[in-house]
Image 1 (cartoon, rainbow, N blue to C red):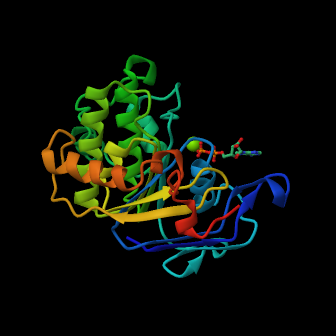
Image 2 (spheres, protein in one colour):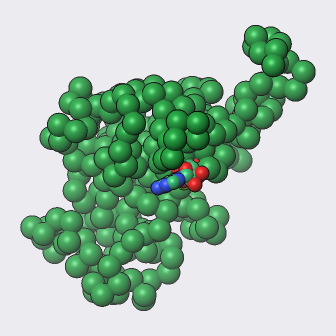
Length: 259
Ligand code: ADP
Ligand code: MG
């Protein structure tokens, strides 16, 4: 497990006037599960790509355990994308072997058991449902025993029963491995259910407008009254939070903004 520190002054693809991300300071503790929630287009995927080193940063730093990203920190990172990104010409086992060539058959069966895919190692991706393919991508991500796991809306476009089962699989694996997690979603229920803390991003350029710890006992179920009350209270305090705005109509002056 590692701690993650992000301190970037902004991110633009074209010019500074068209900043996608604003000034961001994010600290994630070892083993912490942090969700990032914000409307689409606010730069959530860009941020994860920067954390993973797939996208350059304009200025500032990203540190894994105080080692700068550009100094190639000695930790293991897994990234689960929205699409499972399996190699279609390889079986489930071969897809897993691609990331950890030395993995044994029994280790493959063991991780497949944990994600509910027992006996499926010889199948090809096209023989699996969308939910099962995502299970393989979760198995692949945990197979390398990551110190940090990044997830970019991994359960979007799945039907709710499937998404629910996958959330619980992810949660069980996180409890077992105690990996540091950064989870991007636009689904507030999902974020409340899984995370230790939620960071809410503003509409573009994305900045953190609220950093909220979730002090509800686990396991958390969206149908539970305490869960619903927690969410209701948050949204009544900040009705436009999910639109990426913390200011409420008519209250702008309280925040010192008279434009
Ligand atoms: P989110 O994941 O929150 O929906 P993204 O990070 O995908 O947002 O994108 C944020 C903005 O940055 C979008 O307006 C998108 O068009 C723009 N963007 C993302 N990647 C690039 C790129 N490589 N070149 C130019 N613009 C980009
Ligand atoms: Mg995105």
